[in-house]
Image (cartoon, rainbow, N blue to C red; front, top):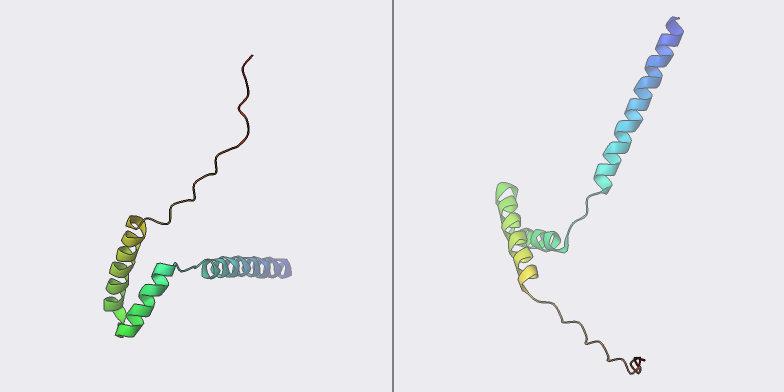
Length: 91
């Protein structure tokens, strides 16, 4: 009976460890950086900022870049060509 209890405890520990490892791996791979975040990080690197100064700078920078992206109109879409098909006649 002791052998079964030891086996069950070991199996439970193994399963929980694998589940935790899978969750941790998912969290690490899901991190994607926006172009604004990358640009602000480059600017912070150029200024040599670290710690809370860097964090504040990046937050302000990303907010400014996001504001510029929403206020700057993009290229307007090309006009649709008019259809040359004859219109249906009513009877």
